[in-house]
Length: 391
Image (cartoon, rainbow, N blue to C red; front, side, top):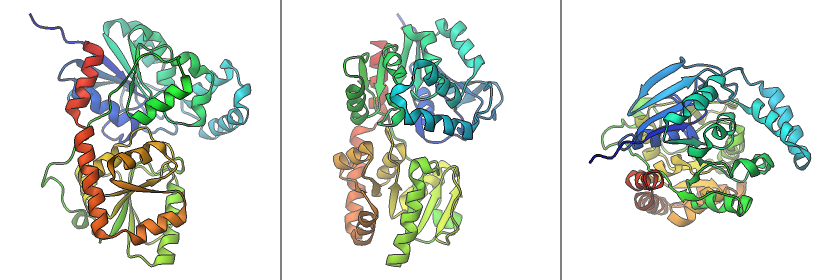
């Protein structure tokens, strides 16, 4: 007798081939992988840009790899300046804000999509489970309560000021269960909410590599010379990029190192004019992999990360990483893997980059590679998701 395939929806604020990194990419990857066992679709908005939530993709269904992506229009653009002022105001008096103000902040945060919420309200009963990726956006906050009896939450949370709003004390009790990406995230949320969390599972994720021979040498494609440092991700002050750029410029001037800094990803902040900073924009997966294989170090300056697929992908091709020593998740990855080092300030940044030998860098990269192979296989992640929903 055959077992009925579950029908599972994944909800995330934006999703598409042009959206890389973070909760959005992880959500799509898990939905595509789990389509081997379930009938999956991703419910999302038509936005590509996370700043204003402008509608970019057409409304409706699109087949993206192994799963369907169903998009709904965003109701209105986000006024970034007004939102930043509101955030500063609420942050300054966070303990004195009530639910009405906090939910007004969430509406301003966005993205709000009446169509998506109405779909959950009316069609939610057709799904066996609905998995929400990322706690911080309106799609999750206003969508999850509509299907709370079958809702699961992958919070992708870390220690940031927004998670101390009191509205989360009620919200985090609503889902059937939680999916944690790392032990660090699990430990933090258990401290933050104490005994008020539903059951949780450490699912982790899998990491894909580009098959041998699939990537052209990056130096050929972009006329780059080695050695270079590499940053992959959203180029944004909130990701630590402004400090990274300043550290690089100062290090170059003081050490006269031959390195360049290669940036891959969406440009959100303005980049300074500096000959040795090379911005490639959004590139193919093959070119990204080639950059990782060729780099001297991957730099991860972010203070807030919940998993960091980029870190794991770089270790998978055997290169070392240098991360922000104030980010618990990144430092814990480096401690457990012995695949990377971390810095607290500019002096430590300089010391590590200027004194680590080629042999030591290669050893770090190979240790990171073994760590990813042992802990981040898709087969293991798939089995954990299956155990949660299929029992």
